[in-house]
Image (tube, rainbow, N blue to C red; front, side, top):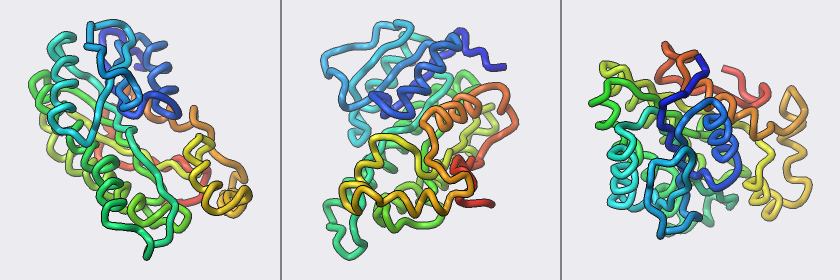
Length: 247
């Protein structure tokens, strides 16, 4: 049930971190993997290879539809979409500018919406598919170290995913989100830069497991939710936070 042979898996924000790890896991399980990120070359076109890296600007609807359209046409479908593209800011509430707010929502929320909107009709036609969208604990409880615009964007991801799950269920399409806590990725450098080198000590002390999460611990949940092992799970948000927040 963790076999992705013959499946096409598309991941945004896959140049590094959690989604890059997930991409490797999917590939090891037999998937045809398409890694999308703004850091990849703009010149490359999709050829249908086993694992490929393509440029995407998730804030550009035309570009998103073009890239996913290429993939769907060449492979004959899209089976899994993982929305991991995102930016993070740590800034006091009153200091967030209009431009910063718009940039955060455009990448984290609007971008995920465009990707889902482009892939959904493909999945509806094939009557199967799975979305996994990366939210955050900050989208559940609000942020202090994570700025308000980041927290709002991730709360939006959770509800966007629920709406997607309700829309897609009749076609056999599932949609779930993941809310990581403090995970040891380069993104945490944003906190350290703004709040100091010991910024995460309180986060760790508040976590019952008394440590940061590891990227592979989130990536493995992505793979699980995309697999047939989660075939009756949709519309939910899975916490990956070491017990920091308990439902």
